[in-house]
Image (cartoon, rainbow, N blue to C red; front, side, top):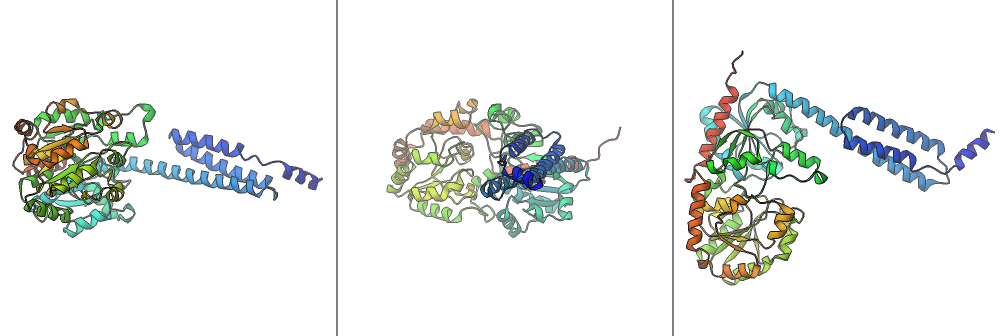
Length: 491
């Protein structure tokens, strides 16, 4: 009787859909709603164990492929459960660390955090603030995005927190919790998953990265059908800041539409200071010095050097350049003895090696390097919607706006903030052949009407026009440091 019963049970086809389908449904619920997360994780683990037991009871030697298929499915589900449980524990940990950071005693210390390369406003502010810190007894740290940035800052003699969070000691954690001021120039999306929580109690100085004609921050919203966890995270890092640094009182209202902050400063962008001087050794740190020298050599021969710096396209990273005729433009410039230098947006730089093979006449700027010293040895700037068009006003040189895919850009990539487009600092070109013809005759670029518009824009967009923005931003930082360390009255 027992043998007969066992044979009957083993002859029943394995139900490879019901148990796993049930787990899939519970996982979908778990991934969608993080309330009651720990109970859901326990339920999923229990279901996995029950399913394995059921599989063992019904397993038949004659069905090995089916058994392996179900085992593979269960293993994949276990991996997903573990990942979700780890994320849940991380989120819970960061919520608690956020409260710890807000109540932790602060010291006379400032932490700078930049992006994936040493550049932009954080680079120039950090270099300038070191002198201020030495004079005023302020401790300065840099939180690097990756190992390359960590090596660069360390070689400059700076104090770095480890770029890998697994290498953080208890002293490093204390350093972050004790920081009175945090300085950034972008969304706080650090690879270190604990960074935002550890620094939540610091007074946050946001330098951003230039005047924008695109809708950003709180105004760059998708519909809920395209909403994601990443979208929400970016929005969360759009405020709230203690101080926000812009370039003039004229644009303060724009920034308040896009970000949340208490105080506004029109100190300007420290990265623009180099446009008012011959680049120093510090300025050239992490610049593409080989391309910089090549640009100098071309200019020494009285030949033009054009910098093309387009912004990125959402959903068409890098590939859009294949369709707009950049190769024809580069060839036309080369025929005149000039040089076309292309600086891809950091978002599109991972595709640069492939684009270099397609466009051999183009001189690409080294990825993850600082472009600003190179602008000082350029003849004109070609861009589209990048904030570089405004930064370049400091040089009072021609700007060309090459917009070959304008309709696609404004409908598929980003909405434009039209009030900034009333006065354009240069010619608008939509065809590569027209741009090539224009760059063959650089003397035709600098029309009087464009000069007049540039001067008006420059006066309106920038309060600081003498290369001292870094000094003014340092004052903003020390002001926030004083606020952080001033005892609050007890009522």
